[in-house]
Image (cartoon, rainbow, N blue to C red; front, side, top):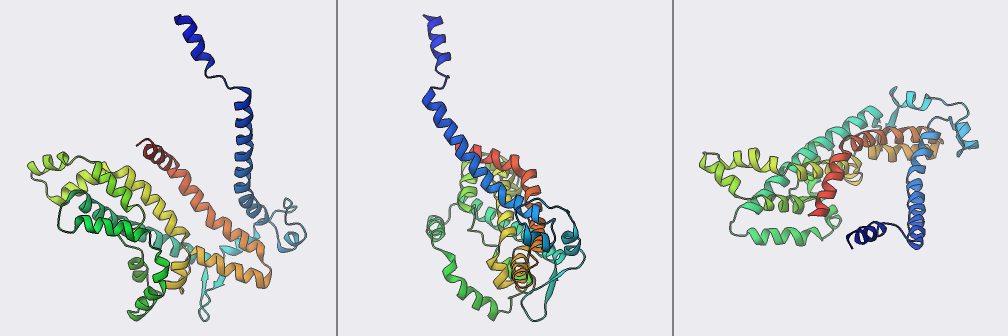
Length: 299
């Protein structure tokens, strides 16, 4: 009986003909989808090594005489008009604007998010539940409706086009992964804090030395996602930081210039330059992102 049972269990892992067909169809569909994602990047990379004449006559073929001229021109002081007066910016300046904004905005916003999530998760005070409910309700309201009022306010206090104005715009605590980080802190037993209090630890020390390290996986995941979001952001820098174009804004300006001058290969090279840092960033933190996604699914 035992041998028969083992034989039955081993046969249960074999796929039927119908299941193999379904699995094959799913594989083909996913392969087509993957190729559709890879093709635009391949198209940009291939045409970035062509000159304008070759791209005009053959935009889908491999470059017959590959050239790095587009990349050399980009990094040799090539300037793009900012759209404000005679303002111009180089690709290096756009890189610096994107990196500086993304790093500072990510650090400040995640700090305030962690502070707010921790206080609402671990401290009881009048209005705690109301504030948490308000955050949930407000998260479903589109903020784009308030963009005109926000622009008027920022203009009145003369923060349009300033670095500090951009930080203020994106340092809100109740955005992004607030609810997720709140649930992370909520799941940490308060007994850890009580033990630290017995040893004389202050509230700040408990927060920075105990709670933050214990919730570091969730915090790091949303820090990465928020950095990528700020890096790819377009509308906020375009409206509130127009005289210091980021890469996202600069590519749009370069596109308008390419339409007028026909220098599309230069635009493709700039797109590749803008994509490469994200690919490197994702390759470095891929394990962290996937592990936290799996952990969240198991929970």
